[in-house]
Figure: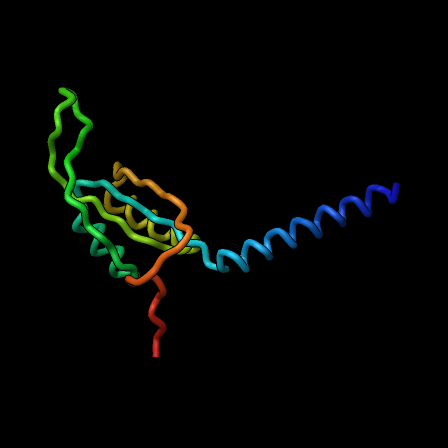
Length: 121
């Protein structure tokens, strides 16, 4: 009734309002949990902590093998990063171990630990 231009502006307004409400409810920074399984876990741990991120190390075993048996004990690395840091963290991990298994999941909320990057004084 009002024309296509008004309809498109209405859609744009609703999208902007929806995103603003999302920022208000969830915060501006979105965090992502990154889990890394690799035989080079110590090198990866050093690289991630060198980037100013904390890590948690889990002990695990590889469940993937020719005979289907649990084998190859290895450390599993978990870290939390902002979406802007993910490309550099993944690039660093894959430079160290191109066959590393990386899983990312959205984090709704975090408390404690070393989440915020420490500013330089």
